[in-house]
Image (cartoon, rainbow, N blue to C red; front, side, top):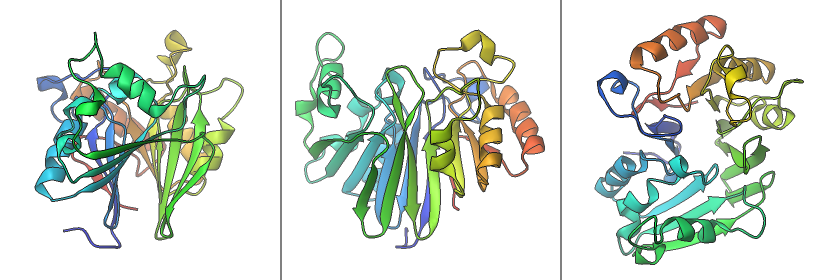
Length: 277
């Protein structure tokens, strides 16, 4: 049972690029990005990766009928779960889908309509029975959803752009910052401003510093850079997120030990993990 003061993040998908189910990823999980952030009775979803299907089942069992879905961007692993989100097919439910990264006349609705269409998918977004609405904003804007909840946003360094989010509720804050690539000439000032003093920061940590030189331009960062940013911004808890598909549970255990040594109290995201500020 959720109280009006509850504020937490729960992870339904933590993997980058492509889902990777199997015995070697069973502990941390193989679903692509999907994070629930609960602000009292309000349920927000960040990204519609493959983890969205299971979250939809949870929502249905708990009788929730009003949801906001915020997309970091619309690369396929971040929207692939939307056609399988049972909540969207139920009459009486309300679903607002938001994005802030699009340019060149594209809109949230037009991109999702293009995705759920021939030849990629057998049915269109028009089949949704819920009251679905599509909302566009510009990364960098502040969204005040009601008198108690504020979402601050920023543009991220990613091919075709992405949006980072900071959710503020009850004097606390949780940041969702993926997909983004670090800069060689210093820390990303947009991110530092967004995460300054945040209680929890979920950050794109797909690569290690040692791996990164082979993947410049791919639009992703490292767990070491995440730790550096969180230290510079006086963040409470740093969460390693958007794991490389090839990373096994054993690999992520090694990273968990290393990041905790570098910045004690840091965590590696795993499916089912719930964190409160």
